Image 1 (cartoon, rainbow, N blue to C red):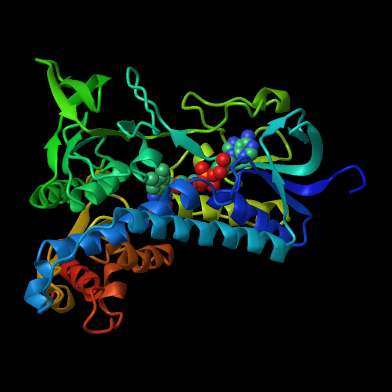
Image 2 (cartoon, helix red, strand yellow):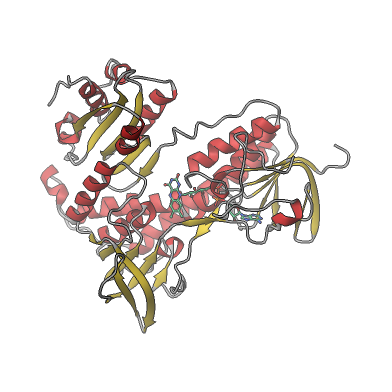
Length: 465
Ligand SMILES: Cc1cc2nc3c(=O)[nH]c(=O)nc-3n(C[C@H](O)[C@H](O)[C@H](O)COP(=O)(O)OP(=O)(O)OC[C@H]3O[C@@H](n4cnc5c(N)ncnc54)[C@H](O)[C@@H]3O)c2cc1C
């Protein structure tokens, strides 16, 4: 250890990096974490999962109260929007949670090195002119917003913004155009729709939510339309100009055809995210990125250079916080000589709209390609708790192997879908069958009973439909 400053030096303190650092320290390794942001927690805690959920939660409550939907529950009265207070509670949530990571670093004796790290060799990095040598270096630098050619984002002006800017809007836009019908665009578009904006989602593909189950994508589109979001599918944005307080977007059918101009008060560019490797000087460590800008890894998260590891959004796979966290634990355990494994086939994905849209495992289309399957479905309208709570939109769908009955995928649209999907992921992790889920006693009345019923429907025997 004499020559090394640390056993483990983690670059980036997002859910991948901070979790890796804490687990490494828990395993007795001398650990540091370098972070270029002012606060710990990465994209997720600062400008991603947490602030977006703070706005989704608050805007959902506002919309329920303001739209008069609560009147049928006997709750009457007028409500008004205090956007500044709504933003303040979001900032408070971020402050509390990022501060919590600083506390956990202290508690676990993880050294927080403030600044931007760049490799100077295979086991050394420079941070603000100071050199650090570590036996193991974990690249957990995450991702940033993918720019759209021809469109300049300026979050300060609040006209053409990315997801970070869309969280901070000082007033509700009259018309917001969301470029990209993926998870982030639909979540943030929903926030501003609920707060009063007209929202138009422009999507290049012919359907929203790429990567999810086809039936779930179609059903979600119907529900978003019912909520008042407007969609321009199979449409590409070719340019955007800001004139005064407005943006003018040129769009045309992605399959070719006449262009048109859309006027917007705010344009949210949310076409995806790209790995952060700029300025890392990976070449000094003998590393290169693949065609998608990612750092390639083995199953144990090692890179092609011994002692350098990589996890989270900067490596191939879904860009999700819980995937990064699990990889953080696994990489630390591998560095410590234990066996850290992440089952990348079972990573749940959730859209935190109302209802939530969640899935894990194979889509019906993928499962059918692999062999014979059985599918069981159950509508949330037939679930007593959801119906009682006036949350009848959505369904649960269980996809099982026709011969072995092993669950291959579960898809849920339900108010509590993001919570319900955990049970499906666990059943699948244990190699569970639809019968295992169907014969597991579920508390009544809960939304989770819909998962049990969908599993029963795989054998054609649900009770409540
Ligand atoms: C609006 C939005 C909502 C989201 N909602 C969800 C959600 O609900 N659920 C979910 O699972 N995922 C969500 N995500 C995705 C999630 O935030 C990411 O998948 C997750 O943060 C990735 O974690 P990470 O540790 O790989 O990287 P990041 O969280 O991106 O953290 C990387 C950190 O490394 C730092 N860094 C980069 N380069 C250097 C360097 N050279 N030196 C020092 N520090 C450096 C960065 O400043 C950053 O803080 C959302 C993302 C956005 C933008």
